[in-house]
Length: 162
Image (tube, rainbow, N blue to C red):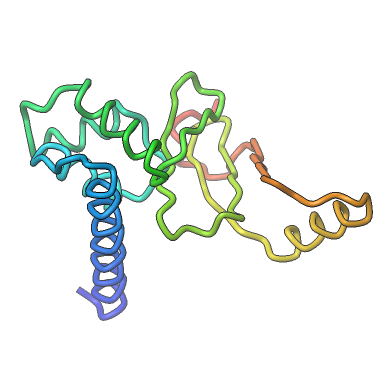
């Protein structure tokens, strides 16, 4: 494995561990207990670090806990949302996807392929500065921002290219 790959995996391990510690602290604050199933679900959620549906997370978690049920995964995702570690997103494909947000840049936006449904997060400093300037010119302040760009990817290997 290359040094860069090792470093990024090491960074990912560190990021996941930090998110898990923060999650456990919040559980304790709320008077909730940790369970083996919940721990595996939350760890996989942060490890995968992508917009994921309950079904996709269930499929992944079953590689570690084959007998886990959909309801357990769904309840854990709801708990992550309630505790501020995930945000439910609807990208128009009929499925709710959950975006892990622990220590994530709140200014990030999304580019969604209308063919393969791939979701890419991006952050453009100039775009954010321009939005702030437009809002300030109109004597407003931004409470929240949601930019979702729906586009056709140019990747020839896109499985849904028509």
